[in-house]
Length: 79
Image (cartoon, rainbow, N blue to C red; front, side):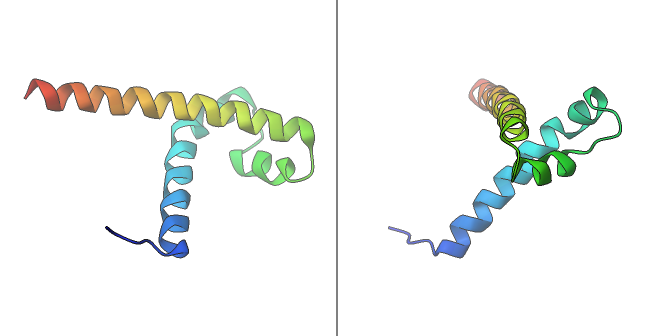
């Protein structure tokens, strides 16, 4: 059994968040000209509306990640 330190699990969470953000960054910035995903993340810390918008975008990212992982799984099982 492997025991992970808090920093290891925190690093994994940060890596996953960065990956998810990479899946939506371009679309977010196309839909919100003049804004960046970092702008939204900063505002989400004090704005309920922006927190909800960020949550919705991250849900899209999670869905895209699941679809991508599913494709990889299908390719691996076909081999």
